[in-house]
Image 1 (cartoon, rainbow, N blue to C red):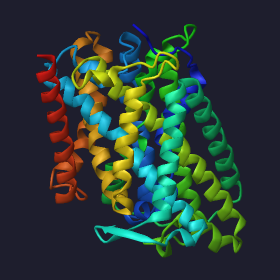
Image 2: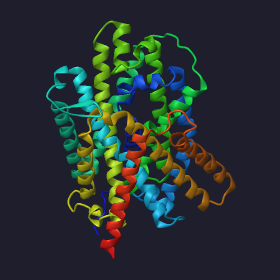
Image 3: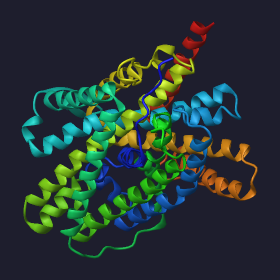
Length: 434
């Protein structure tokens, strides 16, 4: 049977994990982050989130050494739970990765329209009051097709693209921090930290993407490298968000940025009175968008491939291309789903953040719980318990009404649709498999 190509090394795994986390949220949604309670609450929320996720990252590092399977959470939970639990654990993580793909496809048009306002023309229709413009839609389609072609033709092409975009983002980010001016900001109440923590899972999802391509590791790659890549991605990713928020808060009065599109760029333009920092930020954001889109495309296509290989959905999704050694049918499936989501336009952006956060936290909890059951050493169970507690809290903050910022009816509907789709695909697979 044809297997996936084995070509990935430590830099590739780091670039995938970091790139899957960091896209353009720091530019497109900065006003939403600040509006949750000010910069200090947002900074502490992301910093605390990065620290709290270390035990979860540890569990993933242990799991991937024991079970290098593209199914990830579905494979881990299958060791101790019934098939239905395993199936929906992986299905939730697939949502967490896949939902970012149409998000980024929409965001590229939004970002480009900031540079070229003429793209906001030829309105086709509206979704939840938000217009969908033809030029922006076509731009999202072109980017989706480009990344689909890249991933269809080989993991080495995809990994090289990921490495290149990640290096560019980090270099430009250092330059951005270098030109920021030091100013002050006020403290915020504890509730603002909670509001930020609720979205941390969505923007930090990605550190656990490395195990999804564990089967594609170079033969000389040591399994301990997975944990190193995960920890590096968590520290660098959380640090990136913390410093981005701090830079915006330092350089301009943050209260005036609430409700403004591309608040990060506006802050630097107002403070420096020049357009060139804005161009630098937009270039960096574009590369960030590419790396995040590609990283989540890789992770979601591998999960979909693993489901097809396990025959829990249509087995055709488990096909490996004979020439390119890629999960070709799964790649086309993610492409089709991304193009469908792209049609929703800007109305997709903020609700997706909320649903993706809960899906990620749920998957992390299931992975930690299954490891706690199979692991017998007391100290490792203590670490795993911390991971379970953190991920469960992050999940409950989205579903319990007692917490501010819990799911709205629209978000519950979106979540229910995804669960129903999972049930449909699983039931059809059971009929086909007899």
